[in-house]
Length: 369
Image (spheres, rainbow, N blue to C red):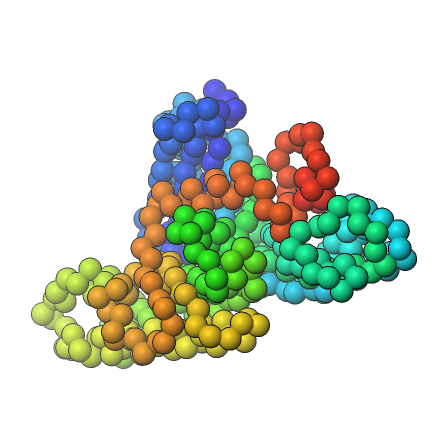
């Protein structure tokens, strides 16, 4: 057995692991798997090992390496502007590479407990003219770059690498799950103009804001769906497991068992009070990090958002154009696959794939191998 024909993607969340394996030669040959609900991540290792074993049985090949998608409440994005004088010479690839490397070293110096997952160049300013792409060999006197670094905590990265290593599996590439999914959904839904993706996870909420194909910001709040469960547990004085089940039943519009000493209205008030808080904080983040005034299209996604859907929209005092998007196992895994295949002219590839013959732009964006 070998692993030449398949690519494997794992989305390791705090409440669930999802994974997909794709045949590179036969697009119809694809397998998906997801874990049971994770309690405090205690059974994360065993769930990952179960999925690896099931994929090896499905594909009749060893899973030797995977691409990993992760998020964290401690995830952060850092914006850097950096410049260089050119003195009238032709702008060369090495000039831009030098600036990116200089900015990268600053991030590594000041954020020692983080790994860089994404390096995104938002803007090239050449002699006071803005470009969304690098103008090739243009004579100029001055260039500056606006760069966003998306970083993940090193301890989380090390922990997951160690889990996969114990199954003799190497990590090819680590990406930010919320960011990768937002790109996939934005392209599939053909969203343009100002749009924000609010990804409510187990214990974090990510806000990724775009204008067309330009990302303005990625912000993370250390609050998510598990906080709703905690609220239910504290106010109704019941354990966390029961609270989680009540929350899920509310989403599925199922009846709550009669042994509860509370009404449906009381439960709804508890849930929507926390949701209101999360959305207001997200709204503040969107307008704080965006240079654009006016309404944004907002797409609400993630496990934590399942407590809501369009039938509850009138319960939320939120002014933007909001759509509740129910994610699927297939869509999440395909986000990782499509991200690995696309060449984003804004993004420097931190961990490139196999080397191929490259042109001017490809050499830049595969610089950091």
